[in-house]
Amino acid sequence: MSNINRKIEAYLGRKPESETEVKLQNDGQGVYIAFWSDSLDKPKPTDAQLDALSSQATTLKNNAIAVANRQKEYGSIASQIEFITEKGLEAWKTNVQSIKTKYPKESE
Image (cartoon, rainbow, N blue to C red):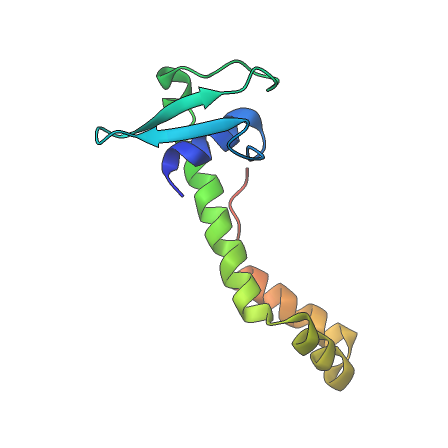
């Protein structure tokens, strides 16, 4: 996912639902917004507005990486249920917290 996607997510406060809301394009000189739906709550942002969201976009990116790493370590739902069955709910909670500590999310 390009950084402009994260900036748009920060600008909107959510991910665009599909290309029916926001479409990006790259004609060889960088990615830009080719389409911005009138149905969105906010008008199409300027480049300056998006540039101002760089640090928020970086936080979104880093948090997405942390969540992906956590999910890998948590394992499947089946393996989590097996863990709970064998070791108990408190041991599972402790394990989850240690994984969250290992892969912390930044404040948004």
